[in-house]
Amino acid sequence: MSRIGKLPITIPQGVKIAISDGVINVEGPKGKLNCQTRPEVVIAIEKTEVKVEPKDGSKESNSFQGLYRQLINNMVIGVSKGYSRTLLINGVGYRAEQKGNLLTLNLGYSEPIEVILPQGITATVENPNKVVISGIDKQKVGQACADIRSLRGPEPYKGKGIRYENEVIRRKAGKTASAKK
Image (cartoon, rainbow, N blue to C red; front, top):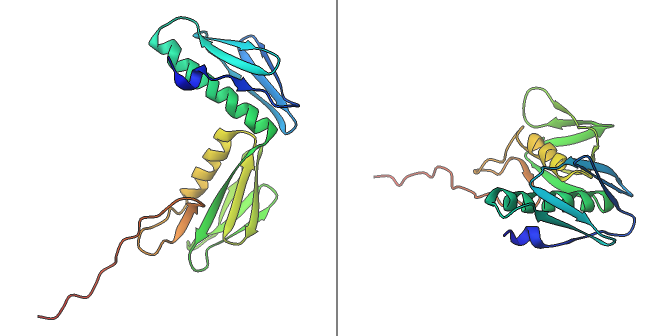
């Protein structure tokens, strides 16, 4: 059995969870999220916690138990606290600007790149080289950050490009002049 799937999910104050027609609805102070479930798992809602159990002992049911436990936990955390990721922009002349849900990035190309953020995702530019992407859906926040990072990934020689705040870039030594013979 799944070790993660066995753990109960504690429901914080102000969060409501309901199941109807195979759809889990989670509502909290930051918003609402929902997720379609599969028939291989049984979800039991008690007063202060949620338990996810497999319908039978098959390997597929056990794997769905861990998956849906984690998806529900991510929704509960998202509607109560929210998620955020920080992107750092390194390079001469590289910078970011924000206007509403439009993020304008100057990344060394001939034209600035404009990124329209998905609904439910917000970006704050703390300084021209630091962008914080936040929202209630962990999957959407991660995908938005990955899309922005893919516009100019970090390169290993000078470290120019867009990287996550806690990401470590393995640096390479450049060409060195060989000794004269």
